[in-house]
Length: 249
Image (cartoon, rainbow, N blue to C red):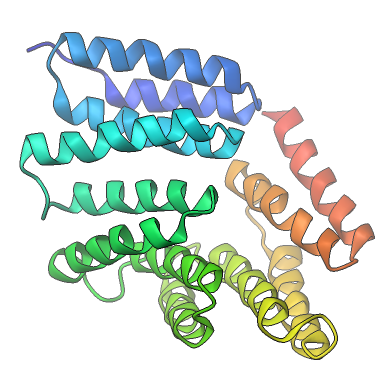
C-alpha cells in the first residue's frame, strides 16, 4: 500500500479555499481520491470524502454531495469503524449534507450516531461537541422541535465558551438561536429576542482579534444572517472584512 501525503493534500486544499478557487479545490480532491483508491489507502480516502462532502455542500451540488455521502457511509461499514472517532466526524459531515438539502429527517439519526461515538470517546468539554450540538439543533429547528434545539444550542455555548478560540462558534450559535426564534414565533413577536442575540454576536465578531482565514469564513457565513434581519450596513462590513482577508492571502 502506498502513502498518501494527507497533510500536504489538506494544506494545498486550504490554499485553494483561501482564494475561493473551488474549481481547483475540487480537481485537487478528486485527483487524490483516485490516488487513495489506487493505493487502497482507506483512511486517506475517508478524509478526502469528508472534504468533498463539505465542498459540494458549500457549492449547492446536491446530487454530487449525496453521492459522496453514500460512499463515505459505505466505507465506514467496509472498514468496520462504526464506533471510531473518525466515524463520528464523518456521520456529522454526512448529516450536515442531508440537512443542507432539506432532509433533516435523514440527518438526525446520523447526528445521534455521532453523539453516541463522541460520548464514548471524548471528554464532555471537547470542542467537537460544540459543532455537533449546533448542527443537530439546526436539524431540529427544521423539524420544528424548538425546545430540543434550544437545549442543544445552550449546550454548544457552554462547551465553546470554555474552548480555545471558541468564541466565533458562540457568535454563530447566537445567530442560529435568533433564526430559530423567528421561525418559532414570527418576526413581530420574536423581534426583541432576535435583536438581543444579534447584538451578542456582533460584539464577538467586532472584538475578535485573530483576523485569519477562519475569521473570514465566519464573517461570510454570518453576513447573510445580518442582511436577512435588515442589518444591511453590518452585512456589507462583514463581507468587506472577509474580502480583505482573502485578498491578503
